[in-house]
Amino acid sequence: MQPHQYNDEENKPIKVLMVCLGNICRSPAAQGVMQRLVDERNLTGLFYIDSAGTYGGHAGDLPDYRMRSHAAKRGYNLTHRARRVTSADFEEFDYIVAMDEGNRRTLMQMAATVEESRKIVMMGKYIRRFPHYDYVPDPYYEGAEGFELVLDLLEDACESLLDDILAKQ
Ligand code: 4NP
Image (cartoon, rainbow, N blue to C red; front, side):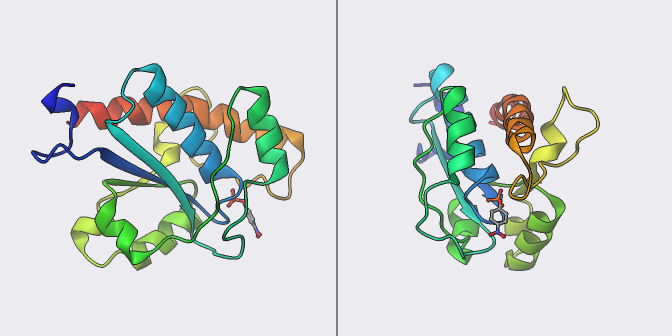
């Protein structure tokens, strides 16, 4: 393990929190996509990837069965249990990644300090192959295409996000 791959001198993992509204569709998928990328690049253990929602109504639930089913077709096994974002997350995580502008606004209101607010980034900023999207749209009331689009956007964006995080170390 190389020291430059850690986020500080204490050799703590780089902590990334994926955030959407319900934590049952987009953010657990983002967590699964990012975890696989990290594993593929032999960076397992150097990163801690988690997800949470700004709305807590689905707390304790597995990801939505539609998200699990579409993700499974691409080899992702999504087993996260939904939870709401907490103020402690802003201290614990290095990167807090919002799927859309509504999520970002809620997170900005929750941030207690400027330093905490600087941890918030938009997943959409890292989308490269889909120029018409600068956010990850909520698939909850959409059909199969909505879930496939979310996975396409996340597979694209997470590559660039991971590159960007590593470049900052
Ligand atoms: P997510 O999708 O934010 O991608 O997890 C949603 C899940 C649940 C609801 C909305 C969006 N809901 O209103 O219950």
